[in-house]
Length: 113
Image 1: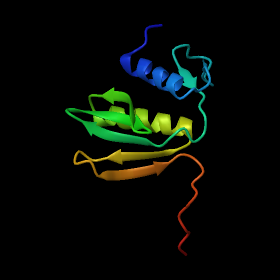
Image 2 (image 1 turned 90 degrees about the horizontal axis):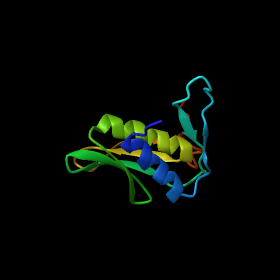
Image 3 (image 1 turned 90 degrees about the vertical axis):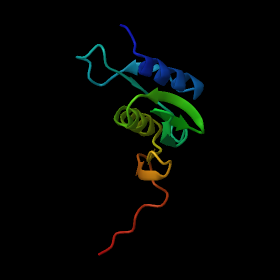
Image 4 (image 1 turned 180 degrees about the vertical axis):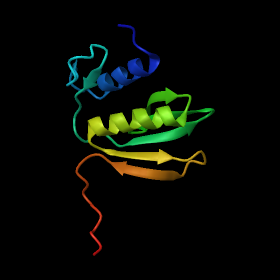
C-alpha cells in the first residue's frame, strides 16, 4: 500500500510520541484503513496558519503540514481524538477561533438551567 505524505507525517508523529504500533482499524473490511492507538494526554493539538498553508502542532512541534485549512483541521481532530486532548483551531490572524475537547475535560461547562 502506498502512503501519502500526510500519512507518513502522522506515523512519524506516533513514533516521536512513543505511541503503540499501528493496528488494524475496527472496520476489517477496508484493508486501506488503519488506526493508531495513542497515549492519553500526549499534548494538545493546535491547527495554525503556516505561510500559504496550515500546520498541526503538538507540544509546539509541527506534526503535519497541509495546503488547506479543512485538511489540517480534519487531521488535527484525528490526532486530538487519539490523544484524548484539546484541539485549538486558529484563524489566519493567529487567534484561536474554535476549541474542542476530545478527552476528559477538567473544567466542563456548567449546565445553565
